[in-house]
Image (tube, rainbow, N blue to C red; front, side, top):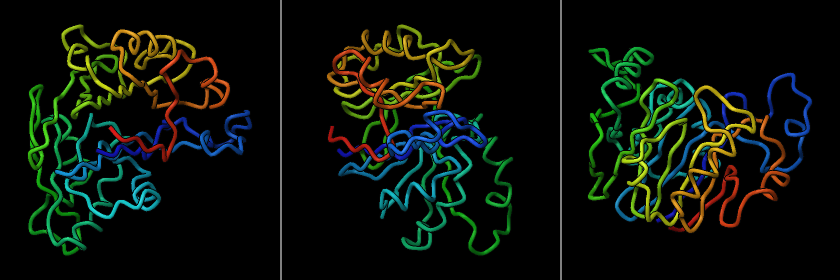
Length: 253
């Protein structure tokens, strides 16, 4: 199974409008982050977790030729705004794209993309098949997806475990019984927004503490703001087996 980080940033990502900090002006491509998303290319299915406003650019950059499904962690705009761009896959494969989301996230999608769900359909609009998920495993073409319930301040968000890979973004609390689902992962991914505390995201210290509890062979941090600092500086201070993710990073799991 191949994992590609399509984006590792936030809406306060890099470059940030009007900001002349060291990160926003960095020439290191690892400091240039689009909104957080990941592509799972498995024998069973090609899946994207979250498609934010940068999705079209990310799909072109990663050369995603085939897309079977999109899974949404939650309904915030920086994770959903690219849904319209699945229409290219509709056209090439002449089929709808399966979209997996909670009932709450589906309501947001129906509100934000009314034209997709209105009948009769206008020719050429995205064709999607909605599937409702909750806090129990589901399958995409036989590939098991295990949701992990986390909190993003007071909002319920889902992370997901797929085989030996666990991906959690937009969290600042994970209940012990939910964190157990990540135990034994070979690769563990968690959000780490900045050094300072934040009301709805883990900061770097909190993220490293959680990663240490999970004890994966390799842990990566994503959903990074420009406030965290330069990639090379932060990478150098991380414990062994922990890394900053960056756009375009590809792993075999």
